[in-house]
Amino acid sequence: MSISVDNNISQTGNSESFDGLQFPTEIHFISGLPRSGSTLLSAILRQNPRFHATMSTPVFGLIQRLLEGMSRNELASFISQQQKKDLLLGVFAAYYQSQIQQGQLVIDTSRMWCAHLPLIDQLFPQSKVICCVRNVAWIMDSLERLVRSNPWVISGLFADFSESATVYDRTQKLGQNQYMVGMAYNALKEAYYGEYSDKLLLVASLITHILPTTTYLNIR
Image (cartoon, rainbow, N blue to C red; front, side, top):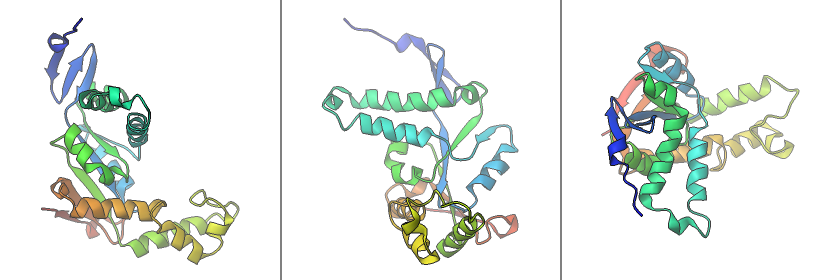
């Protein structure tokens, strides 16, 4: 028995519609290093009602869990490449359905999108990734000030007190590849030097919260 769905799909602006659920054909992303102005950038973009941009969303985590579920079990071989693509697109469609129906251009934020440029290229070939970057020393300084601002708790950035006992322990841990700064830095390096670097737009600022110091660099 075969089922045809071609007649139920229609083009609508920047999306495709299937049984009332519109699938996006164009989504862009904000990524890069932590404490580098992504929240500020999202706030600036939201001043234009055509854009929908927020702080980090759960979308990347959902995509990551789906990828793991479609890869690490004995039934994974029964899921075709097209089915995997449809499932992943379904996450974006369901999460951003309201914005898609309103015709807004969606910009999703996660500092780990840089690690998935090949996937982004397959899902949204026309997309761009806006990367917020900053001197790593200033990022470490910003995080250290954040930790010191509340001495009553052990920061959730670290697993236990041994990782956060001194400024040296904290800086060393944060720079490791499984922690906030090191993981984002490695992802950005891979994206910058990889074959999909033409998707990147870097937004570099030495002083994150002062707009006149911001420069824009197109990576070719």
